Image 1 (cartoon, each protein chain N blue to C red):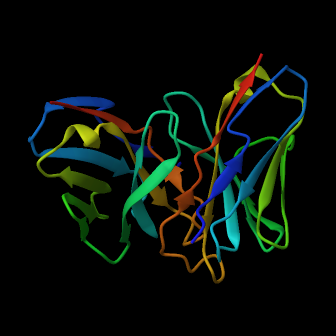
Image 2 (cartoon, rainbow over the protein chains, first blue to last red; image 1 turned 180 degrees about the horizontal axis):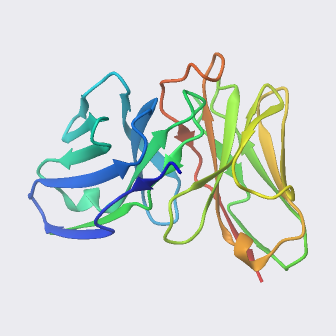
Length: 113
Length: 117
C-alpha cells in the first residue's frame, strides 16, 4: 500500500529558528512530490514541487529535498517567522503524473514570537 | 488569472439527505480533482475529471458522484449522507494538456465545510 507519513504531528519553535519538516513514503516509484501549506479552515497553497528526477527545489526561505531511494523528503524553513505558523502537508504522486496524489497527515507548525 | 473557487463555503445537512458542491477550475485548467479532508487528517482523493469524463477514483462508495461541464467546472454529489461524511471538501485543478504528463502544482480552492447532523 502506498502511504505517506509525516513526523512530528506538531512542532513549536521560537521565531528566527531554522527548522526541518520530514516526509516519508513507502514506494520509491514516485512521479513528483509536493509540499503544501494549509491555514486553519482554508484550502491548500502549493509551496514547492519536486519532480522525480530532481534532488531539491528552493523558493525564498524554503528548500525541499527528495531522496527517492530512502523514501524521504524534507522541507527546510530558514529564519522562521510567526507568519509561517500553519499545517504543512506533503503529497506524493504515485499515479504516474495523473496527479491523484496521496497526502500525509501534516505537521502543525507554531512559530512563537 | 482566476483561481479555483468553490461554493458554498459552509453547509449543514441531515443524515440521509443529498448534497451538491460546486467548483470552478483555474482559468485554462482542464482537469479537476476532488478530495475529502476529515478533521486532523490529510486530504483523501475522491475522483478526478478530465474533459467531462471520470478519470480515476479513490476508495469512495458510489454514492459519491461527480460531473464536469464543458467549461471544466465541476460538481461533487453525495447521496444518502452519513455522519462520517462531515469534512472539508477540496477541489483542485491542474493541467492544460493531457493527464499523465503533469508536473505542475495542484491548485486548490478554499473548500466547502460540510457538517452532517
